[in-house]
Length: 187
Image (cartoon, rainbow, N blue to C red; front, side, top):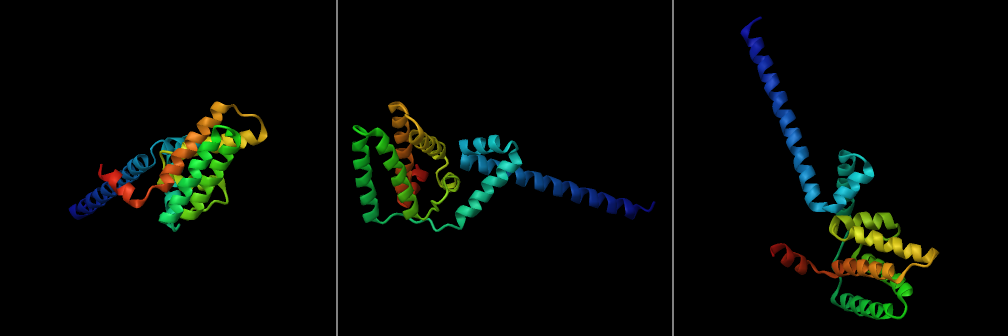
């Protein structure tokens, strides 16, 4: 066999090896980026999907859907109004915890709507929130589950308190301004 054929074969093999290396490195970078961005939500999604690649595909899909949304900060007036309403709901929790949990759920949904998140479907809400606030989305799901459970049966005060704390964590994140986020990132 002529030596030029061996050279062509060697070049093709090198090109294939480089391509495999580049694809593998890119996949690893995507995985690392998703793990860092989503934190515990990454693990939850992998567990739910039963496969890391399927979970990563789902998380990237969430990012694409979220990027299409027009999420906007609250106006100062809306911010003050929501903060005032939250304080009233929080005060009401002492005497009427079950209705306060329901009000907290409604108030969080209102803030999400005002910010530009779709709020027609809870699973979609949680998926969208997971992109921007992955550290509190598990708590949001837990709070919503408790809220739904209390509509069907009695739920203990401790569970209601926990739901309220979870709603407050998300509520606080939703009220943060872009200024707050950039200061947090610098710290």
